[in-house]
Length: 97
Figure 1 (cartoon, rainbow, N blue to C red):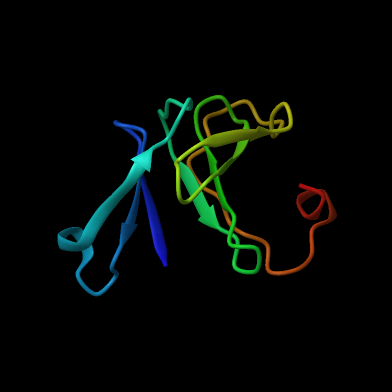
Figure 2: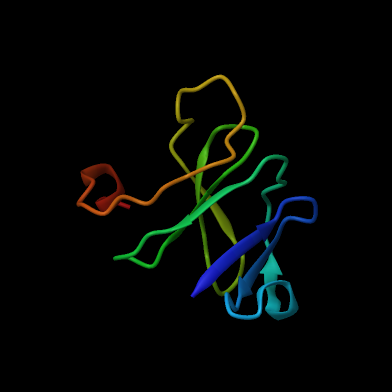
């Protein structure tokens, strides 16, 4: 499953990679998070969607409802967050969530 976030409307989508823009289906509004910049990644083992935006906080996004949950107080950088990468090995702080 390929997920996408429309940052200007704070909406979560699934996308069929074979059809690209013609196959983007809105799942839900992402609440209460308001996006500026967008970083998004699906963890390959847990299926959790992680996202970040201008406030540099890491969020989990419920793929069914679009509900966002802040994870921690921030990721410690001074600029906006517009890129994420999911770990391919065990990361203890994420496994505790």
